[in-house]
Length: 104
Figure 1 (cartoon, rainbow, N blue to C red):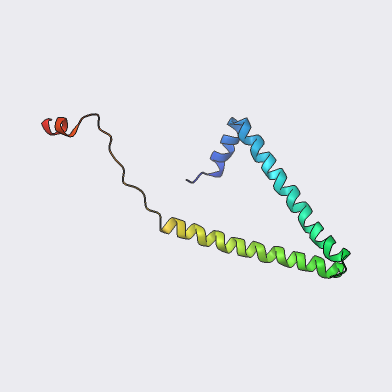
Figure 2 (spheres, rainbow, N blue to C red; figure 1 turned 180 degrees about the vertical axis):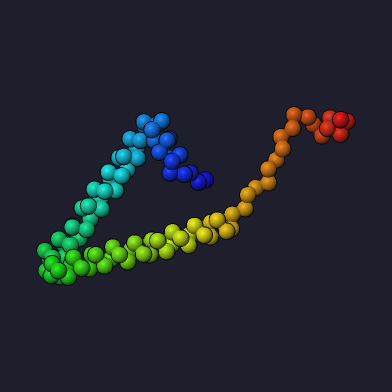
């Protein structure tokens, strides 16, 4: 099922529960990402396994690599889902039985 961004926004405006859920989800993602990288860098530096500059550069490099891998797989999965999708045949619902249809 696909939905356009404008439809999503209109659903957010018309449904307060969806709006609150979306805002809370974005908040959690933002705070989680905001705290993960500094914690990873601080752990490497505090244990003296890496210097501060090397830890920051490694974290930045890992984020860049992750973003490119994610984009590659997102593109690949979208193409495979769209190309191999099969729509089920539509069944016509009739109020009449087969015998009644034959008599008509």
